[in-house]
Length: 235
Image (tube, rainbow, N blue to C red; front, side, top):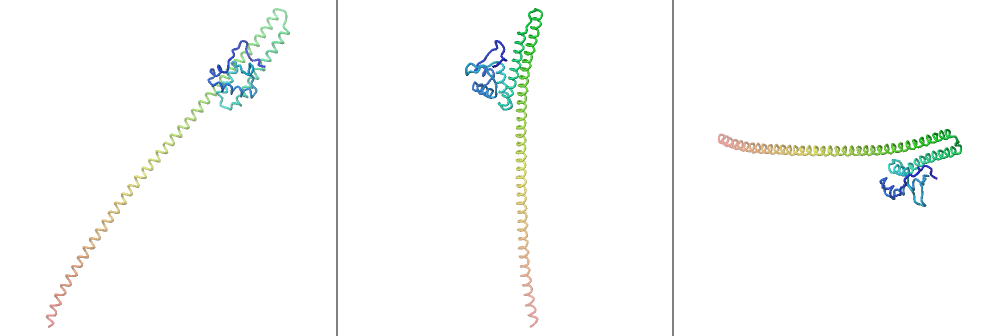
């Protein structure tokens, strides 16, 4: 039986808890089942769970955890057991104190002061535990945000790197295509020059051949005239 409930502490329904925590009502039932599976105790009206402030804090811890739900539930169960243990010890101390209460007014006043001090210490410890849970939730939330920022930064860096690689690859491809076109144009120009040189050489050869042919014909004609002259003198 739970003994960590304060007198007149406000109770909440599943719907109210869902609105307070910012989750769906089925998720409240799911978290409740996970907590109970690991040993957590709820106040109940039949099969219906009744939630108090510490239960809402447990559901928020499940909502914000970066670990598995079962691991977080185990930690929350341990925390609840510590609270229940402290509550039981306080109840036993109060019971023993009542049995041994003195009848003298001064002694009774002193005993009540001791009791009030123990209650104040217990409440201060509960407040400290609540603050620790709040700080833990803040730390977990900050770590989750840092993880998100780091993941986003890594993703953005990877995208920028890929974009730079693609840009360099495109520039290299364009440069290669430009060089290839220039080499092709140079090759075509060189082939034209070679062909022009060949054509020029052919023209020179043809001109030289025509010249040689005319020279040969002229020599033959000249030789023919001298041959006739020699034949005349021979007679």
